[in-house]
Image 1 (cartoon, rainbow, N blue to C red):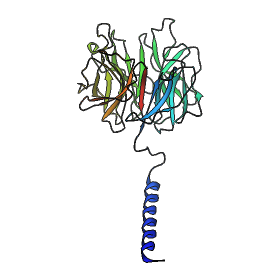
Image 2 (spheres, rainbow, N blue to C red):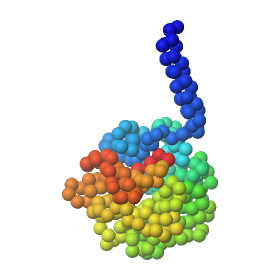
Image 3 (tube, rainbow, N blue to C red):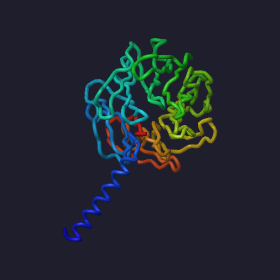
Image 4 (cartoon, rainbow, N blue to C red):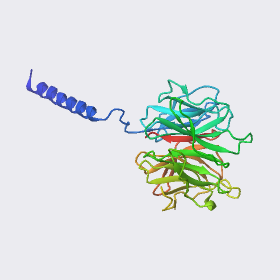
Length: 312
């Protein structure tokens, strides 16, 4: 073989070996370079689950049936998605789990109550969610935990107020949630083991709700403005996990509801809607935590989209 071709073959062999070494060095289930966002949308005439890249491209539909599919959340290992099937406010709402590609759907809760707003435990073995069981008016929400296989359901809150929107701390010890037990909507945390050691983190005057832990567990993002006199505006706020270091991230006349953090803790995926000018039904946006800069990823006027969850 001539010297030139021999050198080319040798070079290709070295490159291939290096690539195999690098690939082999990646841990099993390693995340792709560009993680996906899963969300719910009625763009197809019914509420289904979709995924897209973090720049809004690469849309893929995961569910396609007449039963509403809403509020999805990735499992910690990115292999599964839990969600509410039957509608967020429907009495028939139940918690389901499926593979990340939409296959292998399996029902987790099965009862006559409304179960929704699911959150995974960091070890991927349990699910926390909100359930309405103690009254017929839908005014008493409580937080329950269940194994992913549907066994060992247990109740964490027993207050007569609305306790809802749970999110697990990355170390698995705490759950943050929204409650109006003080007479106003506020952010709380409690023991993830038994619901004890309840702590209120925000003042009643903020009307705080929808809290989510950062990937390192050091911060919590949430929305304000859930009160009778707040109007339709909701902004993104961030605080330390103990309630200190409160800081407003966005300050607009629009609706911005943080649902999940990027894996590096620099941005949040949020529900977004214009409240002035041409008012939309809802889009998916990304908000930079340091600056409040907001990028609308979907821009689908007349379509309702929400519940974005960033792949871990």
